[in-house]
Length: 463
Image 1: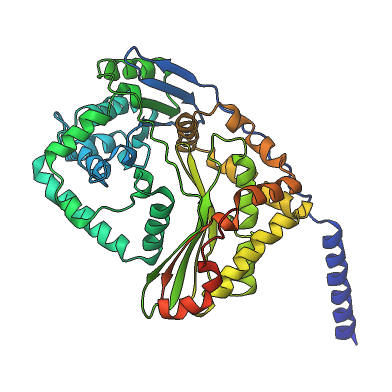
Image 2 (image 1 turned 60 degrees about the vertical axis):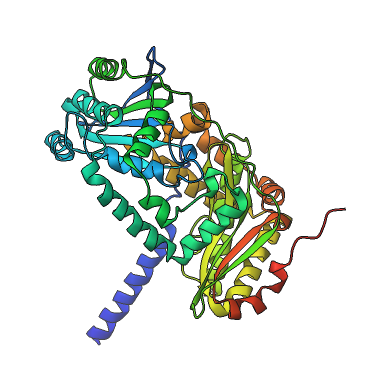
């Protein structure tokens, strides 16, 4: 009897606890605040070099990035990846420091040095303990201004790049991307993704030196400093190390004229168990006032884990594991693309569902609560992106590349929340247009073709 009463009492206690838990749910999260850009100091040297210094945080470290408006955009048709090889060779020593000395010097300051080459910019950066900030400026200046380009390292660098090329070209995702960009951008530098092996193997030291000489200079360069540092000492170091650098040319402005025509290309991979889908078209770039509303639209349509396309073809249908859509941007250029690896037998049905979600969003504004969840997600990730010195520098370099004011950052959260359900539908109708889509599929042609006949048809002629 006693045991039964004890059991009843325990059950009542658990039931009461559950009721209390239901009544005492945690309050909803607060609305993320607008980003406040830390106070920055901007300096322009007589030779045209700019510097942006941003005190940030309390951790005694400082990040310095030398960002040069030079990259793949500056390559000629027969020079694909020459910018990348030049960046690789810049890591191999200067006229006064060997590659090993560069690494050891950075390590002795509690940090490291990296070089990355992109379509529009090359970045030479490092982070060290705060007290060594001026020393890091000196090291980075030597790397960017005085690369040795040692002949002894050239073949190894080219061999590494050939291996990377071989791996990339064997990937169905990379094959699809290459064809997608080629269709949209043609022979513009933005459309040239991979070199040939012969092209890579043929690069000479003279070509590399000439590329550096022609494309690196003060007028194309901004030095960013963020973290904990002595403002006067850092500015003095920048003036000392960069004032005598040649001005060099102004940044190259070469804006593509992307194709807006419906196009289809199928890359045959006989026996492939999956099809890789690349579907997209040119859209507004970051300089356009529609870009932030497009960011919100993309996140709701396919650019977040809880997005509509992802929920449909991943969660509900099980056609794919990790689909995503993206807004990919370059200088005065951007495209929207949905990317998915789907089981071969459901290539057609997957496309059908993707287009169904696009049309649904064109015709029906999303519910306010669905949009609010996406806005909370974007605002939260934006805060995280700006929570480190490197993140701050990345955002400032983005503004500089695209010619945007600080308002883009400081009002970003506000502008995300200003997007209405009606605006999302408007952006989808205006930009995500089926009759202008480029569709590239990599997979088993024999199994895919019967499934996609309606998508492979050319767009009707406009009267």
